[in-house]
Image (cartoon, rainbow, N blue to C red; front, side, top):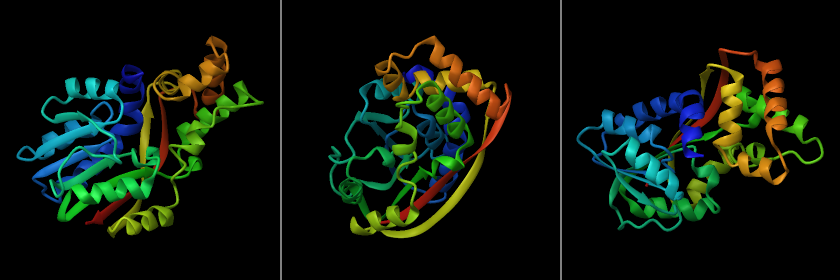
Length: 253
């Protein structure tokens, strides 16, 4: 799953936002950076290049992602870690950064409180979340394909998890409950560009948790063909370009 995620989704969906988040992180000039939900290291590698004098620690809950990411961005210290129980001392970092990971936290306030614990006074928490599903054209097309393939019981991972924490007011309230002051919150829309809808479908169907949901429903090559057909009808065969919207937050401890 990590390899498919890296090959098909990172360049199209995640790299544009990693570049945006890196610019914002570098402007803060941190010396000690902790990254949460680092995945395969798309943001990590850019932080290392943009902040050559900073110590970067990258973490992920998934051990396979840690193994993959540590090979891709060896300049960081990689650790397996749960955001709700970070294995670091109080006040150990100037900046905690997270790209599209907070949506996966089982308890947002608990995780944000833990982030605040490991930040030094005045340290910053910088992260992004996806907007509503309707603002991400690639994933609208994907979900339509899944609903066509499984009309009675389509996988609901994308509407409920990646796009399930898409109310900025809720995010700000959770940050406040954890003791943060929100300094900046903004909507960012960037273009994703893919070689083909077939590549996109392959990435989503094999490089995300949708893979397990499709397998549980007995999906096979016919599902992939249906998803590709629906995505192509909506996006074109490729190369394809589509807008993707996220919210970016910067909060002070």
